[in-house]
Every structure is written in structure tokens, then in C-alpha cells.
Image (tube, rainbow, N blue to C red; front, side, top):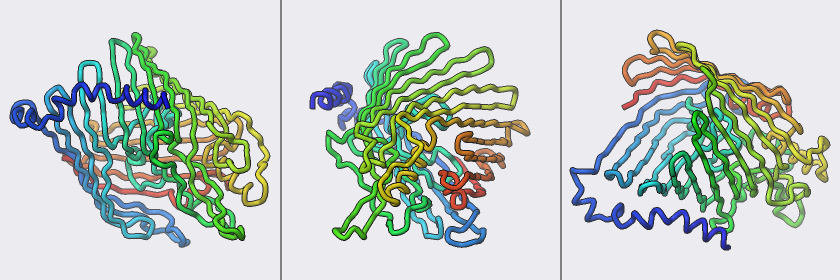
Amino acid sequence: MVKPLLILALLFVPSLVVAGDFFDDDADKKAEGTNLSYELNGFTRGVFFGGNVVGEDEIGLTAGYGELDLKCRVRKGQIGDAYADVRFRRGFEFGDALTEFNLREAYVNAYLGNFNMRLGHQIVVWGRADEFNPTNNITPQNMVARSTDLDDRKVGNFLIRSSYGAGPLNFELIWVPQYASSVLPMELFPIPDGVKLGTAILPDATIKNSSFALKAGATLGSVDGSVSWFNGYMPMPGIFLVNESSTGLDLFAKAKSYKMNVFGADFSTSVGSYGLRGEFAYRNPMEDYATVENIFIPNPDFQYVLGVDRSIGNFTIIAQYIGRFVMDFKKEITGSGGIQKELERINRMAASQQDQISHMVMARPTYALFHETCNLEFLGLYNFSTQEVLVRPCVVYNLADALTLKAGWERYAGPDGTLFGNIEDALSTVFVELKASF
């Protein structure tokens, strides 16, 4: 109990110091017209996706919607500010009508010298690699989100974030009091016959179920680096088999979270005209992952990303090598019974632990044309261990100031029994978007 209380005290120290001014209504009224400022921006877009219609052997529109995004920032002098990002969406998705209100982020910042604090619903991304961040274990992701922007897959959660900076050093502390799960495409997984999909099993909002993260960073010359530690429930759950009857006939596959300690490090620097970056993480489960009951918990592993980027005129490329080493790995599935073995295969697939050592490469080249009014973008990924492939070519054309047309193709492919092999028909898509920003 000492550790949670100490961390809570450190989180709230900056806020206790500044609360007397930042949250004083009278002070706000007196400051009106002098040090209170507002910013309002956002976008409106219409977008549709085409591909294989789920449940039908034909091509059609799989999603289409109109969306309004409003971003608001209110500044209170040098003491603090508040930010909110709200989205309204109406249309259809995977054959169902869609009406969605999404408070993507809403938080308040308080500043006092070297201390900062952020309280509210927010998205936090740790790490310096591109797209693949093994040290980023705070923000959940929606793996089936239909959007032309990959960042929209990140899902906000309520956090308390506190930081302190002194010269080249900076320290960050995060408390996650309420668990939020990533969204898995479980409907697309090869769930065994006789097993139904059930409601996720999530931890209660108690102190012992909280997650904590610490990071210490430094800037030394041209090198930026940090070390980090995460302790708590991982956003990406596993799949757990539940027997909800005495007869053993009502079997349910449910998403279930698990605790891990994650020790990480990252760096970025430049050598001549090349940018270099790296990210590393060792993940160690806090429960016994080797038992039949805990097949939803991944093995401990070590993940690493090494990348290089270079710009030549209007051409820019980011290339990365992504690797993983799984400890205590056993090639043979050891689960008892056919259903248990099948679920263990699915969990290995979802956790990217089908091989003891896995190797992937990713490339993201971009090229600007016509005085930078047209951008050609490409994202490619190949997994040498599982032969999975992702390609995402895209073109973005500026029709006028703040009015863009985007069109692209997102294609997943892989052998049977792999993640991309299971989602390729449902989630591979072409997309067209018309977007006006303000």
C-alpha cells in the first residue's frame, strides 16, 4: 500500500500548489479580457470505405459517414490551459447504422515553474519509433476503427499525468486509475465451434488494479533518450475461456486483461543527414503464464525497434526493423483439450508470439508534388517469420486552402492462422475522403 500512496502524493503535489489560483472563479473573472484566450478549430469530413461485405461474397461499401470534429483550447495566462477534442459521426459501418459521439480528449493542464500536471481524458504515446512503440503501454487502441488516419485508432483514457523538468533532465509520472481495453477483432478470429463470444472481463476501479508508469529522459547534445517502467494491466487483452454452467455446455471466449512489468528505453539522434532512432522493451508477466488457466497471458518477451529516416528534397523515407524474442517459448501447443489448444493458438497469434524470434521490416516513404499540393504516401510492412503483409498506398491532394481529397488502399494479407490472414477479407479496404479544416 505504501507504493500507491507515495505515487499518488507525487502526482498531486504540483496541483496542490497551483490550485489556489488556477481554479479560483474570482481570479478568472478579474482576468477576463486580459489573460484568458480561446482557440477553436477542427474539421468536417465525408468518407467511405469499400471492400468485401461481411457475410457476403461480393464487393460493396463497408462503411461511410460524415464527421464533425471540434477542438477547443482555453489558456489562462501562464498558469494553465484546457483542451477538448469532440467528434460527432453519422453514417453506417459493417452493415449497421452508425451514430456516434466521441469525447476523444478533455483535460486541464496546470503549470508551476518546472512542475506540470495534466488531469482528464487523454491520449499518451510513449516511444520514438514510428507506429510500433513497445514502450507505449498506456493508451489503448481500436484495431477495427474505420478511419483514413491511423492515429484515430488510439483511444483516450482517464489519466493523471505529472512531470518535472530541470535542465537536460525530465521526469514523468502517470497514474491510470481506471482500466480501458484495446478493441480486438474477436469476431474475425477462428473461435472453436461450440464457443460463444462473451463480454470482456475487466478489472475493477480500485487502487490495487491501478496502473502506474514512470519515465526519466535526458537531452545530451544531439542525443535524446529515456528509460521507462510500466506496472499494471496491459491495454491489449488476451482471450480467456469461461464455463458458465455446471454442465460445461455454455462456453464463452472473453477478452481478459493481465498485469505486466515493462522496462523500456528509447533514443533518437542524427548522424549527418540521417536520423536514427531506437526503442526497446522487456515485458514480464506478474502472474504465472505457464498454466492452462492462464493461456490468455503472453510469455515474457523482449521487443526492439531500430529505425532510420532521411529527407532528400521533396522525398522522405522512414525505414525500421522490428524484432521480438519470446522467452520460455514452446513450439508445440500444450493446452489440454482441443478447445484450449485452439484458444492458445489464437492468443499466440494476437500477442505476436507464434515464433520464438520474429523479424519485421517497415517502410514509410512520402513524396510531395506540384509545389507540395499533392503528397504520395506509402506504408509497407512485411513479417519474415509469418509472411504477413500490409500495404497502404495513399494520395492526398489539396484542392484549395484547408480542403483536401484523400484516396488510398489498405491491404492485409497472410497465411491461414495468422492475424492478417484472419482479418484480410473484412478489414482490407479502399477509401476516399473529402475533408475541410477550419
